[in-house]
Amino acid sequence: MPVSIQSRNNAVVVTLEWTEKRNALSADDADVLAAAITEAGNDESAEALIVTGVGTFSAGGDLPYFAALGQKLTPEQIHHTIYSRVQSIIRALRDCPIPTIAAIDGAAIGLGMDIALACDMRFIGPDGFLMQGWARAGLITGTGGVSLLNRIAPAQLWPILAKQERIGADRAVELGLGEAGSPDAMTAAFERVDALGYMSRSVLGKYAALGRLASWPVEENFDRSGEFQGELLCSDDFRALAEKLLGKV
Image 1 (cartoon, rainbow, N blue to C red):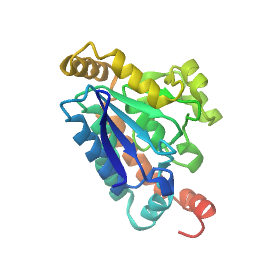
Image 2: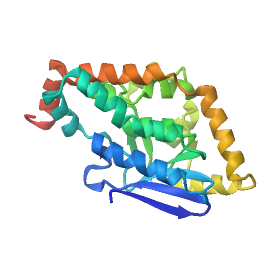
Image 3: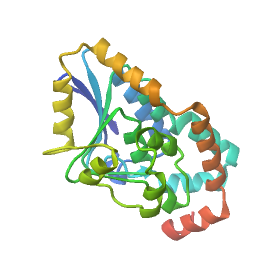
């Protein structure tokens, strides 16, 4: 399986293992990951859920897959695919009954950054970084990344778009996007789970639910993200860029 679920140290760890494509995700992959997050969250022995990846947290969307999608589907069909399937990862994190932690020990780009932003906590290790990525591909944040970013650091959208920088641990702390993970993000994530262990699973889950209720973007943001992305993926500009990046698709 390209996703593993393991119980460790009072946490359940969901690990992306599409290593041959740096954990870049298609709609089929999104279905698998969303189901894994839902399954893991229902582990009654776990007090928190940690999302991580082998080598790379996630390099984003599977560009060849989405480029091909733009060739054969209408904007409305892509809108439905993104909203109902790719965004299911984000909804699974929103609905998780325990706190969620992104352990970022590699690149989290585009969709990968959105997944991290959807978690309740983010640790960035020495080799980890966040990067917006979508705009460089001629796309918007199809999984609600604009609104997910605004719930955490509302003043940072335009600087991040302009700079398109690799946001490492120190910079993420400066921007309020996450915490430094030392000696690595996974170790820091387990230490956080241990520190929160004086509370029961039920109490932790209620804190997580209240935090999301206070800041979670409205549903329209996700619907419009899918709509806009469908338009862009079918555009001549994106097709030209995809051909340049990937060869004829």
